[in-house]
Length: 244
Ligand SMILES: [Fe+2]
Image (cartoon, rainbow, N blue to C red):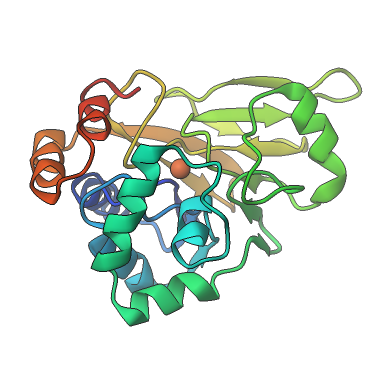
């Protein structure tokens, strides 16, 4: 089965529509969402509703989703993030809030593991180093392990007996998940932070054991206009143009 893998939509419905259309065109029959459907962006309700509509979807709770439904304190969130959460709280319906409340922090299937941050700290740890990858190896079994949270399209892998490796995932570079343990981050749909403003997502072919990253153009100027209309912080809109 081919899975559409995505993370950190963050209320950016324009970007999410482009990603869903891409998945449809490429025959995705299952979906893997690494969390954070809300926060930052102007259309959190539309994004949650689209995720709820997906068939064969595995979806975990992100830290922004958790904060929105009172499962995580906002003490560590910056003021822009808190402002966007306060906006999202007014936008979501009761059904959408209940859906977020029902999501697990970790999903384990026969084909993959799924968390938002890391296996040992699903809501809070940013996977950024080989050391963290090594420290987390005892907390998950089935490879690949999909993560989000950092908004960076990267992979980590256990390289035989030697030190683990990490690198950025670039478009046109299909990864063969051969025997080793992999941790894969599809990057962010709605707020990329790797200097590339295009929406990031991935395709995981569980039968062939491959993963590939894709970057998609979308109308970020429209998202910026909607953010302005919603009274969201200007800085959150500005960063969409440069992907930082
Ligand atoms: Fe996020």
